[in-house]
Image (cartoon, rainbow, N blue to C red; front, side, top):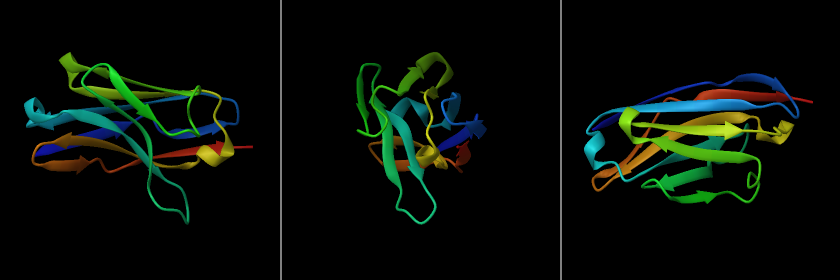
Length: 115
């Protein structure tokens, strides 16, 4: 089992920045990929960014060039630096981790971007 706790969401004006953090605990030795998904009101959950190991990252086209994912293995953490935020980025952001036994999810953190 892996437990994930997110922080860093909030309200920001369009063009602003936020940094999301997620710390894993439990069976962290088995985690391969960590990342972020989001669910906007009335929409399905979608991938934002993931990182496998410390190098291989994957981004949704809608956030490329604006968001940056990073991991700190010493702290069992993953971060999402979000710049040039747009109102369409408004969503609940979920941290996720993958292990050979399955995927785990955090409780989510709200990000609201006002126009």
